[in-house]
Length: 228
Image (cartoon, rainbow, N blue to C red; front, top):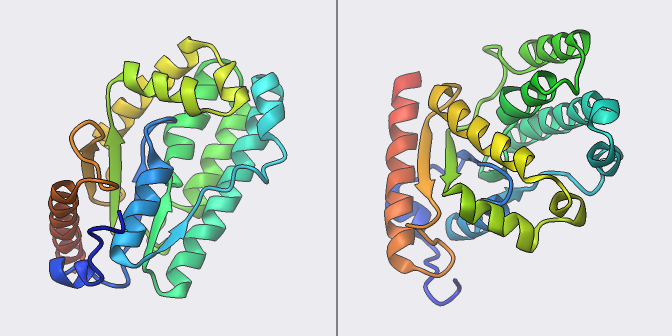
C-alpha cells in the first residue's frame, strides 16, 4: 500500500479529521485488515477489538451456555469504554467491529439457540439500551459493512481463524452469516456503506482506494448534514 499512499487523501476527498468510522461484518470477512488499511490512508488512529485479553473467550467456545452471558457483558463494557475514548480524544479513528453487533447479532443468537437464559438476555438487552441507545451516546459517522459470499468467508475462517474458531461447526458460521445479512438491512444507528470484499481492495488497488474514499466522504457528508 505504501507505493500509492497519498498523505493528503483525507483532504482530497473532504473527509473530516474528527470522523469516527466503524468497520462491521461477520467473522472472517477481513475487518482487521480493512480497518488498518483505511486508517493508514486517512492518517487516522486504529481502534482494535480487544479479544486476546478476554478471559471468557476460550471457555466460551468450549461451553457456549456456561459462558455466553459473561462473554457478552465483557465485550459490551470494553466497547462502551472504547467508544467514549475515541470521541473524548477528538475522533480521527477507524474502529474494528461496532458495539451494535453485540446485541443485534451475538447476544440474540445465543439466546435463540438456547445458550442464554431469558433472564440473562433481558438483563443484557436492558443494559445495552441504557448504555448505548440514548441521545447522549456518541454514534459513529459511518459504519462500513464488509460483505462477501458465505463460501469465501468460511474459507477464510478455516484458513486464518484461531484454533477455537476452526473447531467450530459450520452450522454456527452459516447462522452467523445469515444473521449479519438480516441485521445490516435494519441497522439505523448511523449511515451505512456496504463494501463487497470481492470488488474492492484498499490494500493493493489504487482504483479501489479512490472509489471507496469517495463513497466514504459522501456518506459522512450526508449523515452530518442530516444530523444538523
